[in-house]
Image: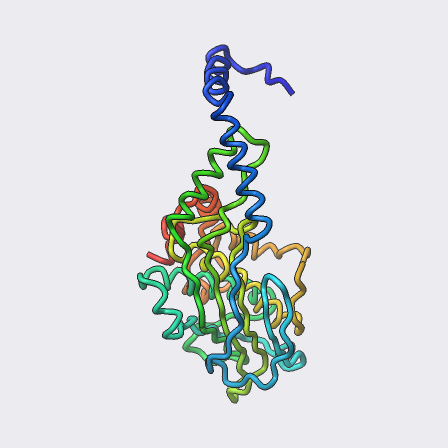
Length: 297
């Protein structure tokens, strides 16, 4: 379609840009895009192994490993979690090995809050969330047991290449399939007698197609923390292992919280508000998550 509202000045600028990108320069950009795309399709995913670090009270009830991109082993006592009414969420912890991979305490806080916030908001659909220092029918605890840091330099290159390709190609090229991050988490739900009612051992690596590069050592772990929180919450709410693909619509309160609105229960404020639209824009341009997520400041 021809844009009839384009001014002569804008048309001249477009023509000048097209002239600069013709010939050899355009062929170089297109060739780079093709090479990056081909590489991403073949090697664009980080592999993260499932762990048993002793963070859970028990591993004996866990089922077999499932999943390809996000791998997990799960257990849930469906009648017990279905009968509960209140939940308290203990702030996620880091194993010594995982904490040692991340230089800044602020970055660990970002990952922890993203994980806990996702769980708190999702579980609010079914349960009353109370502060962590109050008694509840269910107690949620999670431990980050493994992190593969994101290579900030390669993330920056990926962002630059993606922006550059968007000017001359119909679609942006995928992210460079190198220096991708990953995350492993072990979490459980305990009853009033500290008996295990649900558990999940989960691991996932970033991929070059769906995980946006961000200039942060925890850029990928930050995004994956929310993915884990969503999977863990579905295990508890539905009383079964989450499906690989879920097309159900989020509730109104979850949409409101996603855009940075007030959460349904005040206890969720402990983990900060979601960055909303600024966070989405920040992700698109490769900005570090702390630029838009106030919970990590």
